[in-house]
Amino acid sequence: MKQVEVLVETSCNNAPKKALLRDIMIAFINDDISFLLEWLADDVSWKIIGKRTYESKRIVEKALRELKIDSIQTMKIENIITHGNVASLNGLLELKYETIHFCHVFRFNGFGKKAKINYITSYIIK
Image 1 (cartoon, rainbow, N blue to C red):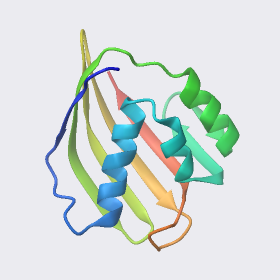
Image 2: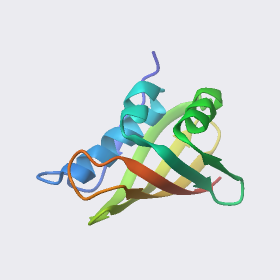
Image 3: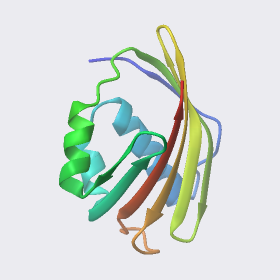
Image 4: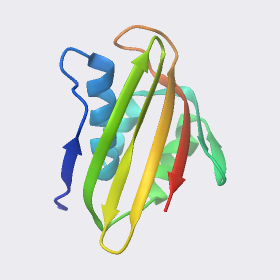
């Protein structure tokens, strides 16, 4: 089991969507795909700018299972912003030999606590 240091510079106190996004990123770096899938709508679309777009929960799951980032040492979340059914977070992953900066923008299919993510736009810079 890999040990990744997680640093969160923004407060998630009393902000359920902020806490959820933090937990989603922690699940992502720990390959906890089942947790991620719980929060994705069946018709989810994941667009990685400059790369490709994955359409449907089944295809996103396949992409997540194929994605391997084994040498993450630290994940730093710098900002988590939420408003209505839209949210975003940015930060960086420190790997053994490189740093990856990221920003993910999420749109939920509703405004409630149980709303699922139906659209993700990811910006990833090495």
